Image 1 (cartoon, rainbow, N blue to C red):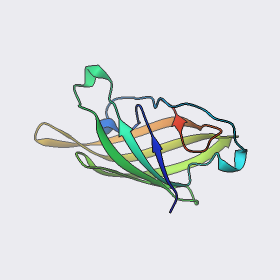
Image 2: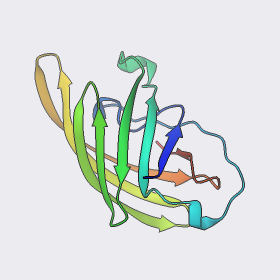
Image 3: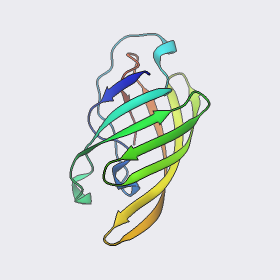
Length: 123
């Protein structure tokens, strides 16, 4: 299993706020620039969300599926496609707990995997 670590902000944070992942780029080939694999995601939500930082796990299958697991929010599922070299469009849905209620949330974002193949950024 290919495990990667990203730092900064992720798109998962309660699936309510739009976030960006901060990471550094290194040189590498386009072969490494894929979402396929498992990622450990250090999430830092937007300050106005009131959500504290947390870690979640995301798995992007080679056939374009996403399974995202948050210890506080549960699971989300979706799909991803490659739009150009190292760039991807992702859509996933899951339930976010807001107070005592669970709301169905849908997230759409674009991501760019850096040349190193072990980091990505995106809103």
